[in-house]
Image (cartoon, rainbow, N blue to C red; front, side, top):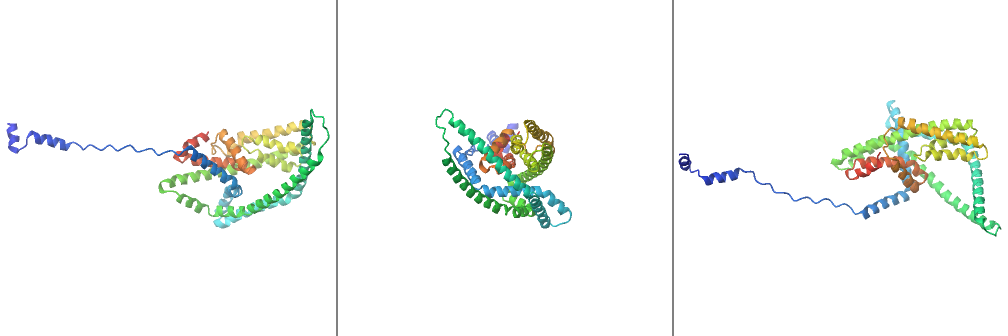
Length: 373
């Protein structure tokens, strides 16, 4: 009966099969697999790294001046913020902060110029005496086992005169360049302080829309890291310098008012600071103190370094750097080779900023993890 009923309606089995096939969802076409982006050849990476190192080497003066200006701007930023809270305009507050820095440096140079001249004169005498002792020991070592004991002083004197002339010529050029570069530092610091919000927002706008948030966060982390690093190291260096000056005065170290602060700030160099901090007081104390006082100097420097490492650094810096010792040591080696003493000063903040950038770039995260703790 049902077959006759559907037959009357004109609905047969073939139509039912066709309807079932129409109700099935259409099969989706399988998309072909997307090819993975090709990784750059290691040779291109090596060429890029070599190019960056070459630019850093040849552009040492310009880059060092800019980085020192950045560090000084971060040191003066809390002072400028305090002046802004006192209802001073940003430009006036930035100018006042830079003026106070210049006044502090000028007063230090003025009140310590006489002592600095005497210190430099005695330092040259110490250096000449040490050079003479080293040259005599070297000559005796060369003359061991030889029958010719006649001193050959004339070639040495002519060679020494030539070297001193070259050294003075190079020194004049380097000093003039340093003074010219230093004249730009106050202006750079002023504009960095007065235009910091504009520079930050304009830098973020340089990136594409999907990367602006990451760029904003990265710049904020770098700013917080550099500010805490500079202010913390400044306070720690002042504490170590003051404590070292008092200790060296008690031990009758010559020029303790210079040596204390030089040793205190040298102690801030990561992992090498304790050795570098011992060199100035021992160097100027040759011929003035006995072996017992020399041991006390070494213990004093070592004790101050341990206090800074275990008490002051965790208090002021915390875990903002997050660099492992191997990465810091390699950074000191590379930047010290590129820029000398200035490289040792700037190595840690540059490397810490690089790690923050690596942590926020997807393709560079493995390098940031390798540099981290």
